[in-house]
Length: 219
Image (cartoon, rainbow, N blue to C red; front, side, top):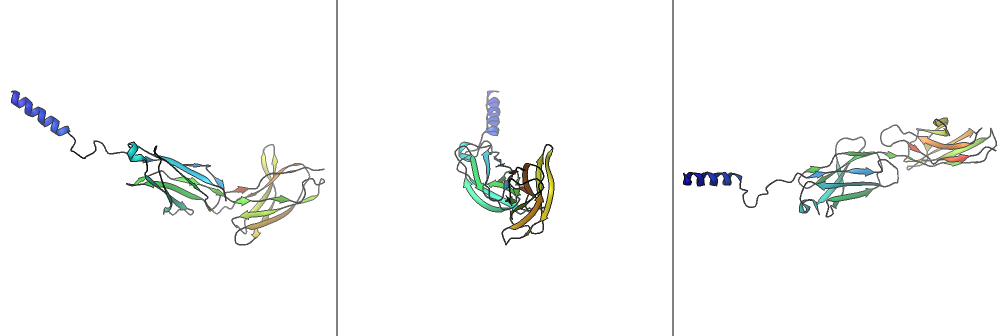
């Protein structure tokens, strides 16, 4: 009886023993990603940060993380942008200046991938006005540029009201060179307020952009 008990105990221990050199449990590594800010104007920076988690400190620190992008029209083909290493806590970060709307993800050794995050890039709209203190009923020239170039699109002059921004005039963007489009519009001003210009490309490569607001005081 004692011999049978000893043999049974040996078989049980052998079935649960971990062979030398084999990890007791495979690491379940995960990658996170976040963008800040969530949308930018052309020329601004966005920070993409995240962490490699689910493993030991040795498994998550000093690991190469590759940032990949899939710009509009989002064909699902992600290409490498840059590679960094995680810190001791498994954290990583990238700072980039995107040129168009794009989707991003990160990858780590072994096929670990983050979710996909989309970063809209607004067109950059510049505005100048010919007169900030006009007499009531006079015309004020609104002019400026839009980058990147979107010739043929519409620029809308807006005035801020108690219920939001209201369109008061519009004009078509014209050729300003390879980099920018230009606009110019004379608008009759009858009341004081804050004014701006809005440009909505509507073609998917860039998001709607707004100029800075300008205060016009009717004398």
